[in-house]
Image (cartoon, rainbow, N blue to C red; front, side, top):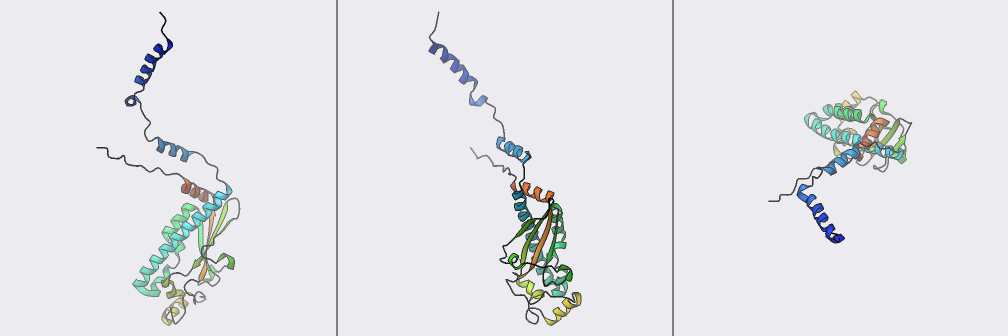
Length: 229
């Protein structure tokens, strides 16, 4: 006996739907997280422009951390022992936390000026690279070395205690202490808002590339399931 095609199709469709009931389908858990992690492990080609962008990110991160630590340290030391105590801590590039971050970035950081307190920090600076304070100088010096520079602007009232006008911001007694330690000091006479010098950072390519990868890597954020009952 022959049955019409429509009569044969109905039982087959019923079986198919029964075999695929939602309560019998096993879904892949955390599929989004797995996809993001797989993408993170995928080897990506980093272009030259990406490395230059990462040089700025890394330089900003390193110097901003150093400046923040310097402000907190100077506030603490000035309160504890005045200029005599605080002037020993005015080298944030030597702080342990800053040095550790520089190690991660494979970077060497120093602060320079055309009117330094220490002659070892003397360096010529282009006026166009010192204003405004948001200017950044980024270069690739070689295949393996990148260069970062940004101006250091006196924007903290506390800094005037050592770098302001003698007799007004700096007492004669404190200036005598500064001259005793830095007999060739030129770093006085500044006012708020003036550029004092610059951060210069040399970074190795592996550190820059790793920082670019860290900054651009997607992060998986676990979201709690909504409460149903």
